[in-house]
Amino acid sequence: MKISSLAFGLLLASAAPASAQLNGMLETLEPAPADTVLENGRIYTPNGWASAVAISKGTIVAVGDAGAVTPHKTASTRVIDLKGETVLPGLHDMHVHPAGAGIDQSRCSIPHGAAPAKVFEVTAACVAKAKPGEWVTGRAYEAASFGSTPPHKSMLDKVSPNNPVVFEDISGHSSWANSVALKAAGITRDTPDPKGGIIERDSKGEPTGILREAAGRLVRERVPPPSKKQYVSALKWALDLMASFGITSFVDAGLSTPGAIAYGELADKGELKQRVVGCIIYRENDLIAQRMFYSREKFSPTCIKIFVDGVPTDGHTAAMVDEYVPLVHGSETGREKGLLLIPQPELNAMVTRFDAMGMTMKFHAAGDAAVRAALNAIEVARKTNGFSGYYHNVGHNSFVKIEDIRRARSIEAAFEFSPYIWYPSPIIDDIRKAVGEERMKRWIPVKDALDAGALSVPGSDWSVVPSVNPWIAIETLVTRQVPGGGGEVLGAQERITLKQAIDMFTRASSRQMNMDAATGTIETGKLADLVVIDRDIFAIAPTEIHNTRVLRTFVGGEEIYTAPDAGSGR
Image (tube, rainbow, N blue to C red):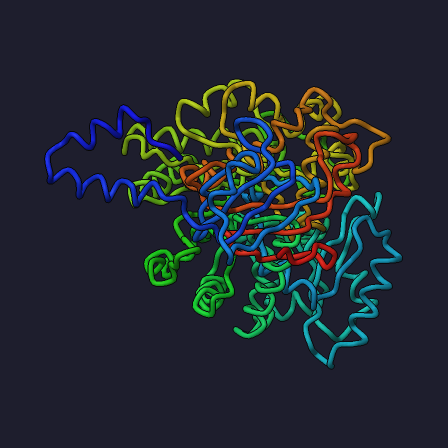
């Protein structure tokens, strides 16, 4: 960097005291010595493509061509020759359950889309490994796979007459228990439905073993919880996997006390590498009160998770403005339009109170009536407390009325869309049966939201979905087809451009996390959260994006993931 001769002359002509000021200025104008330089690549910036970036003390100090970074090189600078590889800002996942994903690795895992015979085969194998009387837990059965004969406790009783068994369905909003598990939970024909939940019953009033929403907790609370060591290990496994996909920041969308403890322990050991916002489940009053005790440099438990409804599958628990297609089996009384789990006045008061505490909200809202209720509550909070500058987040948004999409921007509400269910899959068949073909045309209305100027971000909902791989999501945002293309295009009118998809995973998500001054783009002065990938995704067919491999992931200049074939630099 050079000082013009005119400016330099004016400085010399100043009074003597100014010379000290000049010396200080000259010192600050010395190029910051780079710890790491990445060069000879394709670097995606807000101002177009660059070829090199220099990093000093975790911050980007130069972006441009080779000449821009050369002044920052020293004898100790690590120089990585990218050899034409592409560099993007670090990716964000705005809805993930990492500890649960790790814990799932030790549970009974039902393959997605498994037919009943396969479900029972897997269950029998898990029961055979269990000790007498030990709980057998797992996921992710799909009711749609059972056809006209829905899952029933008697089916599990045949496979496990002595061990208690409880499975979550693919959505995580329904549970399936055998008779031993129901007995352990004290669930009988006389047990009333809990608030926000449904115990499915047959024509004689007997529980069928299917438990919707909060009713599932009656059984799951009887399952021995993982130990602290298991929880920490599960979380660390998940964080490492996310780093390998280029995820540098994320939102934990269901934080409980064991999770907060695990984040704190990893952070204190220097093993929490990503930047994390934790959304505390709204029922966790003690954790909410003590949240700052768990706060760390990279972990901010400053968000509240609120469940407004369920899911628009066979259980009909997502709250809809219009009625579902009538059920073929099961009772429907009171569920023709789904379930609003929290009455509007109660939701308004809750959101206003948490907003006044400086917390952001993350709503689970799948149905259009639930999305409307969440937006109503945000609007009440804004009118009561004023605008904080922080965006509250409405999650999932499977169905949203266009008039509600258009009002989100004015009340600083963001839409978080779920990437792994916006392309054809078995769960989509279940949803289509529940809502009908017409409503599926605007399924996951991402383009509508972007066109309305609403802040729109992606959230995988892993481990509800099988993979946290963001490259699958980026591709299918663009194609609305299964990874690799082919077959049905689901919600064709909601396809977006690749640039829009990348922006959702980077700068928009950074804004949602209130970190946009420091992350989200590759610019001088921002933190060096970067991902190096093996291909230029802008130069290939969109249907190939899901094959993208991450070679390196950096958070604050620290390389937290290196692919085996990436090399070390010099």
